[in-house]
Length: 624
Image (cartoon, rainbow, N blue to C red; front, top):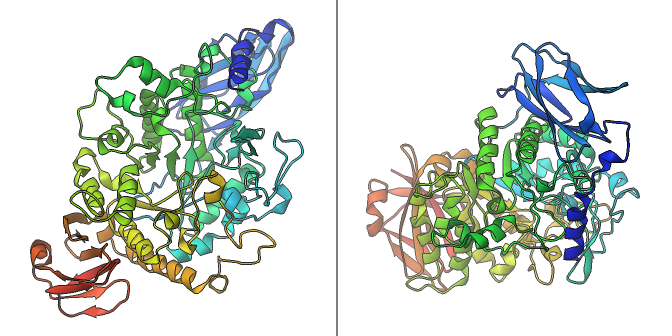
C-alpha cells in the first residue's frame, strides 16, 4: 500500500492536464478572501482550474496592484502576487483572466478587519482544557454523517469510526468548562478531513482525530462548517475563554484537493520509493549526525496516508503562512498548538511564526516536539544554547516535564529516581529563553490516560494535578481527566479517546453534572476546580518566581513567590507520614508565622514543622 500511494503522486505530476483541454476555467482561489489594513500589504493568491495558468491576469481595483503572475509546472495553476495599499477600501475586486478570445472574471472579496477579540494568546495565567470534538459532545445530530464524503460512517459502537461530536456540542459545554476553572480551550483540528478509512493494525479507522486536512479553507461540515466555528469562538470569547487551534503544517490528508492535481512535483517530499520518517529526533540536533539520517527524519512521511509537504517550496510556504494568518483573522483564534513541530522545515517555521507574531504580537505558539531531554526540547523554542539554528517559537509542549512528573509518581525515591526526576527537569530551565511559556500536561490524546499510568491511585492523582497547577508554565489538561477517565493506548488509540459520558444523545450517565458523577469523580472534579480557581485568582502562580529545594526522603518542596505573596507546595511521595522540618527552607519562609491551606481553607498556626501524610501534596499560602 505504501508504494501505491507514492506511485499515485509521482505519476500524477508527469502528466500535465493542460494540454488536454483548450478552454480555461477558475475553480478555486485561495485564500478565499483577504482584508484591508493588514500590517503586511502582500498576499499571494493561488488560482486553480483547467488551464488557469494559461491566462493573462489583470486587476483593476483602487489600492490593489497585481505585482507578478507566476506560472508553474502544472498549467492548471497560477500564483498572483498582490499588494494592498493602506488606502484600499473593503469591497469586491475582480480578477480578470484572458486567453485569446476568452475572458474570465473571478470576484475576490476584501473585508474590513473587525474589532472582535483575536490573537489574545495564552499565558501562565491560563488553564487550557484540551478536547477532541468528535468524542466530547454532539450538539447537532443532523451533521453526523454525509453520504457524499469519502468516509460516510458514524457509529458510536465502533471505537475507530466517527461518533458525531461537533462544535455545537462543545459550545453547549462552555459553562461546564468555566465552572471547572478552565480559561482556554484547545480542540484537535476542526478543518475538513474528507479522508477514506485507512487500514491500521487490521482495523479500518476514520480520521475523526482531524489531522489529515483535505481543504484548508473549510471547517469540516461534520463539525458544523465555517459558520459554526465562528459561532463557537464568539461564544467562548463572550464567556471569557480563549481558543487554541491545532495547526498542521507538516502534512495533509491523502484526499486533499490539491494532491489530486498538484501544482508541481516539489509540492511534496518525494522519494524513489516510499520513505517513512524514522521518528528519531537526534539527527536534527546531533553535531556529529549524518545528513542522510536528518533528511529521513524531516522529509520522510509521517504515515503513508499523510503526504509530507515540502515547505522549502516558496509557493507552498506562502500558502501555509497565509492560511495561518487567514484563520486568526477569519475565526478569531487566540493561540496555535502546532502538530509534529519537529518534523517541519525549521526555517519555514520561523517564517510562519514571525508572520503570525508580526500581525498578532500577543498570540502564543507552542509546538509538539516529542523528545526526552531538555537540550533537544529547547532546540525548537527560543533558547540560550548556541545552536547553529535559532528557533523563534515562543513556547512548546513540555514533554520533558510530562515524563518527569509521571516518573515522580511511578518510581520509588532514590538518588536519581522518583520525585528527583521532576526536580531535575526544572533544574535545567536555564536552557530556555522563557520556560514559563512552555505548556505542561499529564496526558493528551496521544498518550496513556494519566489515571491509568499512576495505577488509578487518587492520592497520586491529586499530587500530579497539584504540581501541574502550581509549578511554572501554562497548564493543559486532557478532557475527562477531571472525571477520572482512564485507559491505555494499547491495543488502540481509541481507548484513550472515549466519548465523554453525557455528551451524546441517549447517554445513560451525564458526567457534565454533579448528579451524574460518582462520589470519587466529584471528589476529583472539585479538587481541580478548587485549585484552578485559586490559580486563576492569584498572579503569584502565573508570574511569581519559582524556588525549589532538593528532594529528601521522597519529599519535594518548592515556592512560588512575588512581592505580595508566597505560596509553598510541599509533597510527600512516600508511603509513610512525614513530619517536615522547615528550617532548611528559611530563605523563603523567613518572617512567615502562619499559613492558610489552599485546598482545605484550614488555618495553619505553626510552621516549624508541617505534617505531610503519605502520598500528599499541600499548598500553603504563607502569612506574616
